[in-house]
Image (cartoon, rainbow, N blue to C red):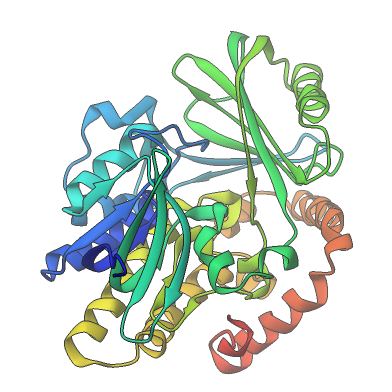
Length: 406
């Protein structure tokens, strides 16, 4: 006789922001929900931890006041500073004032516990089989196989893409993968304002370069196409900060690095699942500009939960429901990368256009030139025409075409 395993209404793979938001919608509607996490909780999560205003509002409205123990020091960030090779700086405040600086190890675990879902940690997702009426899931816990049976499975496992790979085995091979890593340094002298997240539009430093203060130390982070040397690139940035910004730091300690699926939100190539399997958060491709993924993970996760609830209650097709509901989050996220929206709209929660207006015409022209020079770093990925075409479709139709989604 076949072991059908634990029966639940919904099974979520992952325990990050998308998973917590999805679980909250499901449990609030009365559906039995289990969330799986392959590591022991609370688990460490490589992340800057700086949340957007929209994500901050979502946490408070859905999970309540943020306890002090889930915050780093400084406990908040006022905004973002863009730095350019010419040594020009554009400073932008967050809409509505400072936002939290989350300690992801404890913040994610707090949100999951607040969601009301049953959490099974040290449980690794292995595979699934969609039977039409339900999904059968296999996992591994302490060297034994544990099975689950759920009406819906939600993949909210970030760049691990375990669920996405199970549904579309060749999907991950289509993506350009980036290494995103950061190291922590004792501060000897750091003139960079510790109330801001600092980002460099500098092609010689890498595809994504940032720094900010955390718990008495300075983070120096780099992002680059997979295959590069993390230590060498990090060293180059540290030397640049000392040479150009007079930042003096102690030896690096506690390195963190992760391979990230950065790119789908730029070119509207999201993956939302198939049948009774929904994919959300960064696993689906959501990633805001300056690589803040928590707010769009929270909102897309909530939408996945709402779509599942709607399918439970009305027997509507879950995929059709989800894709109809998620279109608004696609617009919001992809708009942040859309050059037409950046030039003529206001897609961000830090006012870039307003900051640019404070500069002289010559300074504005110089910064635009430096930004375009930086963007050329991405030319080997052949995103340019795709971004332009998607931008024009958005302008003409008011949306991004769903035909590009999996």
